[in-house]
Amino acid sequence: MSTPSPAYVPPQERRPRGPGAGWWVLVVVLALLAGAAGGYVSARRVPAPAPVSASSIPAPAAPGGVVRVQTEESVVIQVVEKVRPSVVNIQTRGFAPDFFGQLFPQEGAGSGVIVSEDGYVLTNNHVIRNATQIRVRLLDGTELEGRVVGTDPPSDLAVLKVSPKGRKLPAAELGDSHALKVGQLAIAIGNPFGLGSTVTVGVVSALNRSIQVPGFVIDHLIQTDAAINPGNSGGALVNSAGQVIGINTAIIPQAQGIGFAIPSSVARSVMEQLIRTGSVQRPFFGVAYVEVTRELAQAYGLAADHGVLVQQVVPGSGAEAAGIRALDIIVEMEGKRLEGAADFQREILQRRVGDVVTVKVVRGGQRLQLKVRLGPRPAQ
Image (cartoon, rainbow, N blue to C red):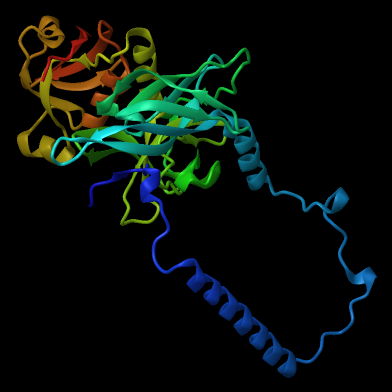
């Protein structure tokens, strides 16, 4: 699979390409002429239709000539009307180094989501990277100056602050991405290609995806087929209840319908830490491990066929203090069954440094319950 690209593009890269405008006019004119000719030929060969009386025209389905909206459509419309005012356009100016290390002017464009009435905005780190000036444009056209509160490159998230100028801003509600199911409705809202607020609809295609972006591997992403285009970065992925379930971040440009969003539960945790301290501390359990599968359990006669098998315990870690040993199999955390590595990582990352988690461990024929205090992740 090709390396995914951020759903973001600088304005200077969005100039139209190909033949000049005159060529397109010619194409349009030729198309119109071809349509007219085709219509003439059809009219010559097809008998004229019978006259239509006023009484044979069906009455409109709703008062005022408005076509009645189907239930599925009304759900999308209600969600869009609720969330769209919270999704903003972000324009940046700054300087970026070239191949020789020299700085050159750069402009960029992306999206963001207002998450509090007093002006906190969630977006992608790559949208505001190297920015010296940030302008945030609301749906009603109001422009506000943005200030960077904090950034977290490993999760590709950033938090901005704008002054609401004496009014309450339209804030979106962050949902619980842990409750997501593959196949459920997903609505993407953003500002692709500088066109302004745009809505696309799809489903949650997969969960817990990992992608390689320049300098990092981003884990636990939501995959969706709702169209995400350059400029959508930092925009909202929304469920049918009008809750933000993800922050759109990347696409695979060679594919169709493969986009990725950072889960809202990860975004909430990162955002709270950035607002509180300006940086993110990631919790550390303290073991090296491999995923337990049925095939692995059968091949080595393991006492459990799910969870993670501890290969090594880090000295001085919370795992060592709790009494976890090499060859233990961790099968539950906080009462939740761990199917494999993804579940184990997710349960840890949604917690904070200092939290104590209860784990169930299989050790030979024993099942033990141990409490592990999560410490700060050691410097790489």
